[in-house]
Amino acid sequence: MKIKPIVTAISIATLSLSMSAFAAPESNTRTLPINTADSLPNMSSLSGINLEENRSRSPAADSMGQLIDSKRTRQATTAKTATNTDTSNAVAADNMSVEELTLKDQQSDSTDDISEGQAVAGPDIGTTDAPNFEVNNEAQLQNTGDNSAIKSIEDKDGKTYTTLNLSNYAKQVNSSSWSPKMNVNSAMTIKLQALLDWNHASPGPIDGGWGMNSKKALINFQKMKGLPATGKMDQKTWNALNKNIPANKPVLVTYTLTADDVKTNFSSTPSGYEAKSKMKGLYYQDIKEMLGERFHMDVRYLDKLNKNKTYKAGETITVLNNRGPLNQRINRVVANKADQTLYAYNGDKLVATYPTTVGSSSTPSPQGTFKIVNKVKMPWYRATVGEGSAKQVHMIPPGPNNPVGVVWMGLSKPSYGLHGSPKPEGISRQASAGCVRLTNWDVLEVYANIENGATVELQ
Image (cartoon, rainbow, N blue to C red; front, side, top):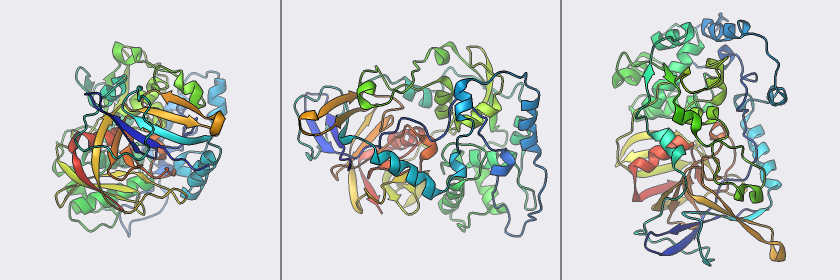
């Protein structure tokens, strides 16, 4: 069934306006398991980065992967839960082809019973049913709902990060330095992913695997710096990656969980829109999912770094050291479907790139130049299920697992916008229903720097 979602913006002054918008397709399970690391491939098998075109390809022991995996042999044997048993054989996204992942999402779409959906700024939309009403550029949007998820991603105040008690693996990640003839290893892969993220050439969730989003990020970084966009490491690229980064900035750090972290609202995301509409919020499902988004990490990699951790207040875990703010005005973005990339410009200067999902073969995004006409954090989602006398409307509350994530930015082209996603690991892989979808942390960075009236080119 074809999905025809709509975006409705509501002004602070009582003005109620609406515009059409495609939202993310419904799915009740994440592409990757979030409660176990058993399905995570060995780090060395994921680190297929082409460091040098003529480098030796002879197999070599990956000491970084061994350091991580050796932790597992030292663990006390515990019985696996039913959840872990059920998900241990799940196929990881980086081990599935683009075609397989696209087919998976298209199959999910084909069983979706939604005929119409709306991302809205607040739950009270009155009797407004004008689906194609273009939102006024000057409309002020209400930000409603619980903003704790956004605070978790954006606000680092009161959170202490150190390099104390790091594992040998983490220390070797931090001390890694690229050289032309070096063998591929997971420590350097993680460091490169972090450096790309710090330079705002986002690789998506950092996972220790050199997948398509990491390869794109390296090419995009080279474009940003005016270097040959080969997608291969060389000395000039390494120098550029480190140029504006403090020499002593660690990639992996220790973080002590706070009482606020543990007391965050967590709740499993139920299946179906009727059940979702009865939730107070579509919160993170567990603390690992929250920390994964805060630290831009694949949850399986977070879990693998922190074996035997219980994630209680006062406990110290190992996490990625986050990037700083972009601090660049964005007045133009280009969403390229072929590249599955969002390019952010300040004038003619490319200042950031993000992996993205842009439409699909069945619901392609339109080509052309449009404008950002409204911006809202923590949008609600109005799901219309069924047709005729069986038609039902459900208001889906905000949260990181809302179909459009934590941010909506509507375009002057009715029915389309830029928004977040409840599935960060699926970005660039799954299909979308016409909109431009990013990870929640990347869309928040765009939100913080883009202005109403900014140009959006859909290619």
